[in-house]
Image (cartoon, rainbow over all chains, first blue to last red):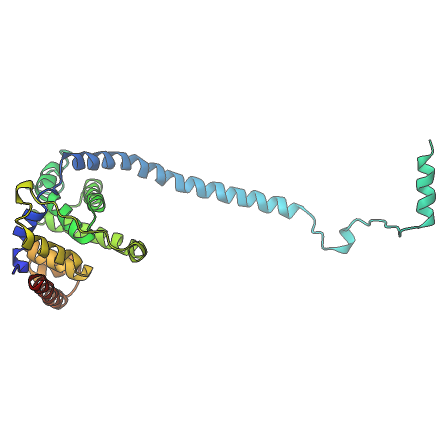
Length: 99
Length: 172
């Protein structure tokens, strides 16, 4: 029966075809050289994004702050309403229709 | 970083030397852990990319321990991350890659390798470092950042599981 002590020899036999080759080495070198500039770009990108976000928030606050709130009754524009069949409206509209 | 030195001092090894000496060990440990060749290669890539990027000051003679430690950490992350997928889709088969002239004569070795692959991750780690890579209990404790007693007890339990699995194989 095999024992765990024989693991190195067993591995040499059953994983003989699994080894770190030149292709993997090439992949590593490519990944290492391409990841370095990305990391630097990412490092600059974060503060730029944060600044843009803060600027947008400030603009949004100014825009919203400049508007009068509609909840105050005094600020609301009054809209004249007429009930259906109101004689005054009928007369006015009849007068408007005439050239 | 071809000629970049990975350690301080005159005995520092270059990336090429480190890759030549230890990459296959890192790859095979990751493969035992994950049972997936593509993921094992990704782990090996991550480990060496990190070596190039962070340029750690490795003590001469302890480079392999650093590489294996980083590899096992990465394997653990991948293992945890793929937990749901594994539960739904099941474990991929543990494929073996014997030399062409040895196919058919390595049944016992295959059984041992498969039994190691089937161990739970915490047992697999100590078995691979102790039996496959030849580290001592104290070195493993330092690498895995656990107590020596924990390493010993995991080794003992892993040995028991392996023996019962292999005995079961023999009885069949």
